[in-house]
Image 1 (spheres, rainbow, N blue to C red):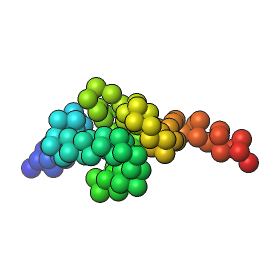
Image 2: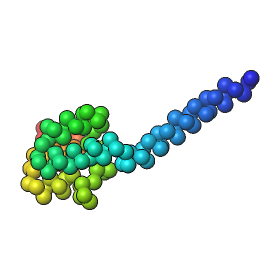
Image 3: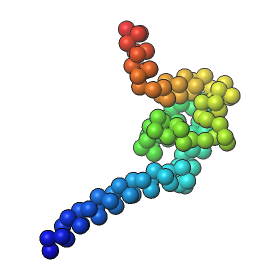
Image 4: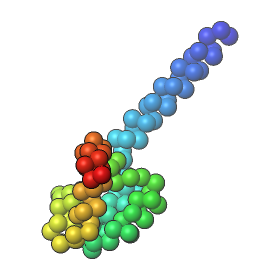
Length: 111
């Protein structure tokens, strides 16, 4: 009886960490991610920043967390937006995908 509780907690911790690792690895192959990816690519082509933000909010994620995983027929969102002359989208993606330190430095310099 003394070993049941520690064993249970150890298995619980291992299962939680194991599920997180599997979930992260399967992110780019899931149906919902593929659907989100296609809608983000379409929004980038058509310069629809508000719809892109709505889709991200609906998926409960941020562009910084998934930007590296999004692939629009072999190109990034930024390059798709630039090819289609979507200036607002290019500005939005550059702002949101910069590193935090660069954004903080630019805000300090602007003051």
